[in-house]
Image 1 (cartoon, rainbow, N blue to C red):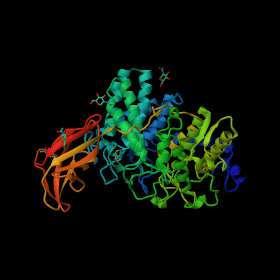
Image 2 (cartoon, rainbow, N blue to C red):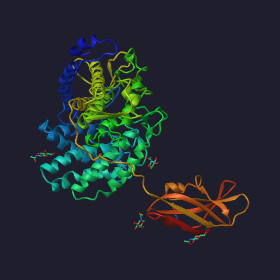
Image 3 (cartoon, helix red, strand yellow):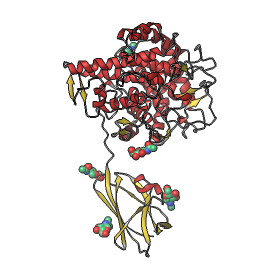
Image 4 (cartoon, rainbow, N blue to C red):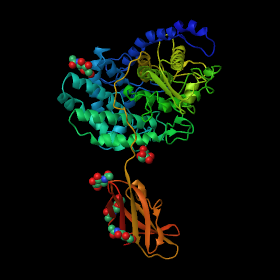
Length: 566
Ligand SMILES: *[C@@H]1O[C@H](CO)[C@@H](O)[C@H](O)[C@H]1NC(C)=O
Ligand SMILES: *[C@@H]1O[C@H](CO)[C@@H](O)[C@H](O)[C@H]1NC(C)=O
Ligand SMILES: *[C@@H]1O[C@H](CO)[C@@H](O)[C@H](O)[C@H]1NC(C)=O
Ligand SMILES: *[C@@H]1O[C@H](CO)[C@@H](O)[C@H](O)[C@H]1NC(C)=O
Ligand SMILES: *[C@@H]1O[C@H](CO)[C@@H](O)[C@H](O)[C@H]1NC(C)=O
């Protein structure tokens, strides 16, 4: 435990309320340590990253148990987003050289053929490389599709500054080709499965979809500012936003982290998504799961509560007080422990929420967020509370205290020299796993910045709503004579036609025999191919002969296709 905090915390017993002043002191001492720790892990001159090429972020200097002396696209991009934000806000002008190194290193990495493919065949989904910018070729959880999205978000932040400070032509020439490769990868792959940010579950993942959606929105805006065609980014952003809604679990009151993986789905994944897609201009919008949205707050409570009983260091803490949190409750990596970065994210989401409530001078309690708010004021009811009300004052003060208490836990388990490892032991609180995890430092810095009330730039989340893609009704009629036990089915080239799967082909009705019919809801304005097939007692016996039938659905209205079996 850090000496400064020891006395303040000791006074307060188990459900401690750290004084705001003691957290001020922690932030003041830890900030420069975290910044130095982060820079030490960046080549070529970082004190702990010997061997890393210029602009390469090592995950940690640890080489055994675990060996993290590699560079991950996700971690590097999150780290450089912090650096770019510090530079473009004028906080630290000395970081420009680092940013230029990063741009050059990532441009090189994009072209490195690797087990996920080449730059044109999926190689941008490769999660991890050697620190000399060569491919890592051992088996791994690949692809991971958040990397290109996070990288483009970091580079777009720099591109916006560069455009304002140099010229559009300069950005088109230097940064745009790199950003465009990443965005085009996101367009092509956001609707495919991949490994999650913890590299364990292959499915769709909330964090991945959320950061992909953000990158496409920012990408479309940048494309437009640069006179480039960003229409595909907008089209797919609209689709991704609709898909994002499907992760919400209304019964459990939380965002389910992954569509696969057979776990509860309670996971820091979702709070991380919320802080990394925070847009103060979007208020408490739930469509993009903003930090103060009812869904993100409800989800945060469920996530935090899932660690209360499983970590010994959380024992005896009141059920509405801050605790140490890990990746997800089922975690067994290194025995399953709290992490510094996942504890910091809880505080950061709440500081982000406080920024918005203050700026809009009100907060809203909905039936979804009611359990979250009742932790802080058990009598609170659904409603909107203006900043002049005592309910607003009580809630925001209690939430600020909860966030500070979360940082006090972070402080309590940080060793006296301020070094941040990956994890701390669930029973003893001692640091463990990789030492000096670059992401732990970055996460501390962003939480501290949010606590100081620093608002990130808007990325265009304001007013977004999922508009389901338009559909039309299409009737397929086919004249086909059949024998007893035989039925006619249809399959074809789009999801609504079962992607050419004979097993999942859709059965037609013989009500107007010998005309067989089915009416389906298909996406509007879409060309598709299809065939009818015959099954005898459910077993495929024949396909129609070639060529495939083809048609296009109209923009609106209905379509009737009259075919004859051939
Ligand atoms: C650089 O760009 C920022 C916007 O990102 C702007 O605030 C600043 O004034 C610009 N500086 C110069 C010298 O143009
Ligand atoms: C692709 O998008 C559709 C429509 O939102 C969704 O139903 C499907 O689950 C998505 N699949 C993946 C792998 O993202
Ligand atoms: C019909 O579509 C399938 C699936 O795309 C394709 O494999 C097949 O070659 C097509 N048939 C013809 C004759 O084009
Ligand atoms: C229906 O689609 C046609 C183009 O096929 C378009 O001209 C018309 O405006 C659309 N009507 C509506 C109500 O969207
Ligand atoms: C399709 O057949 C139906 C009767 O089954 C008929 O009413 C309709 O006009 C036909 N449509 C076309 C485009 O031939």
